[in-house]
Image (cartoon, rainbow over all chains, first blue to last red; front, side, top):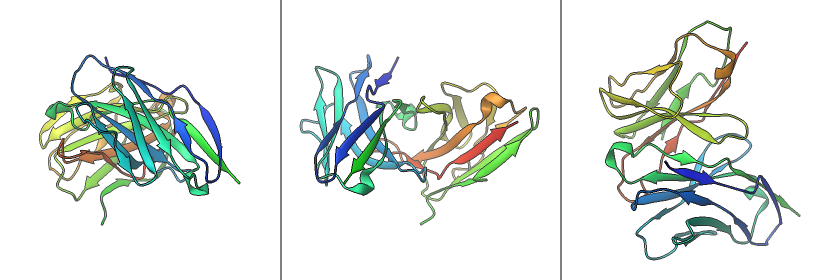
Length: 117
Length: 114
């Protein structure tokens, strides 16, 4: 069974600093995708970044990068140059790459990030 | 662009009442799903659909029904509401596995069952 573990319930980071949010996963499927979503206090779910299990390079999207270590089954999110607007809950999620389950994601419990001045 | 639209945004029910959470998407996505979010537990999958007429159960389906008569709509029905169904509900859709195949979420529906 798929499982996502986020061990940091809360994190603090100073503005303009970089921060790493941890995510480990467990799956027996050799083909899978990993996602990070941001949930601000307003409640919506915002897609940030995606990494496929066969992707050779770590994914990057602007200030977001995904540190993918397949052998360790980790997919940490790195946010560079933190901004006050980055304060939110962050969820790691995984999907097995089966077309019958494209809308089935398994989510972690989330990490609440607070950016301070 | 509307994306994924959920109604209502807020609802209070009494135990035993039934209701339907509406979900509509205008992106012609085949795949849709319903999740519930509870404090400290992340999002959990209730039901999902891979196309019109095809639905299946997720991790926590008990007490909920779904149907998918059109590509656009995927309503979630609570048959007899219980306090344990107090939660925030999210509908999501995706076009599939092309590129990132990310899920697009609605704004959420906050349900309280008294």
